[in-house]
Length: 197
Picture 1 (cartoon, rainbow, N blue to C red):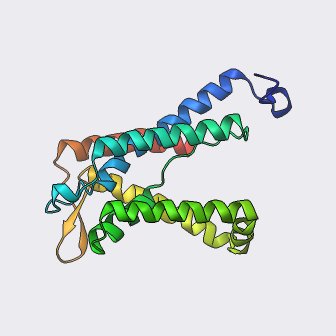
Picture 2: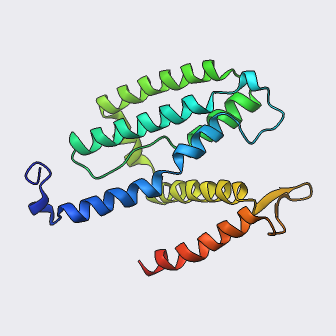
Picture 3: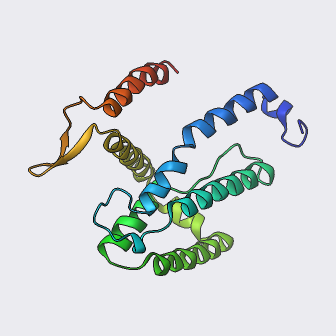
């Protein structure tokens, strides 16, 4: 295993890789809960249940897709990169396509399948790389920052820190809720650690 993954050439060892793997898993595990909630439109109260995707099925699909993609990336490509469904695309699928456009999730999922085939063709022909190289690096950073802010917004909303406000659309809660206090406590614990590293 050391030889196949080039531990000596890359200056790594089993301990480092195990800790890195656990850290990556813990930082990505949120998708197992956020993706089913997002795709099933769990936060939308007046949406008919018969039009929702089953949360359990989405949980299993998310776990299998992340495991399959990450294992392929590690074993075949030998890159220490974990893959999982993206929150941004899931939110676009659920809130824009299904909720606002009124397209049934089954039809929208067929569209995702077709787009996956097109993306695979673009990748195999080398067109995808040319498109990515044409995007300015500043825009690439902005996309990453935007996704990070979106995930932060969802987390703060689920924790009860951010609430609906009729005047400004977004407001700060009274922070008396136990979930909100627990989330703030968690932030105070994790932020200093991430800043020091």
